[in-house]
Length: 167
Image 1: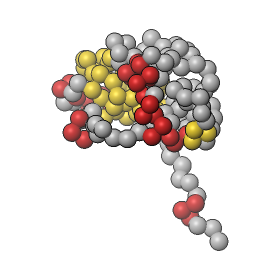
Image 2: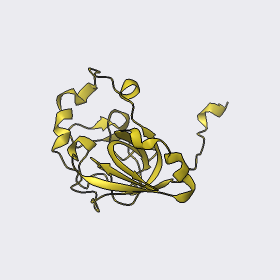
Image 3: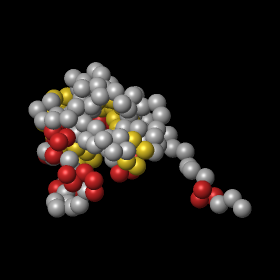
Image 4: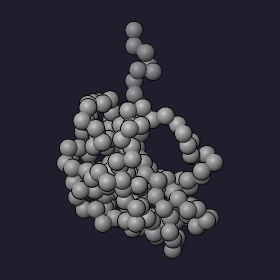
């Protein structure tokens, strides 16, 4: 018998803007925002969504949720940049996800009309922005949390750069 919960729902998202960065190619990019310290970028918010930027200028960091628009397929097992062991996709930050959605916490350095100036950006130029949210340390930070296999290598994200393994 068919269980309706086994049938995945389909969702359609409309980008609210475009992320601009100095990164034109996937290879050589930082793999996390802490490896992109000082890298500046901008976000152009589409006119119909600009009213939603009201009151954002008081936040130091924002969470970007975006489409990984250059990922053509997904894999359930990947070898992450910080490891040589194949891992399950949901235990990694690999872009080859079943739903090509990325997330970055970046520094918000300015709001000017529909343009946001950001720092510590690790996102490919031209990336469609699906949503953004304010980063709130009281809600979003859990210092001391365990992070599985990444415990030993997470600090390496500051210096490791991407290659073309996830094209």
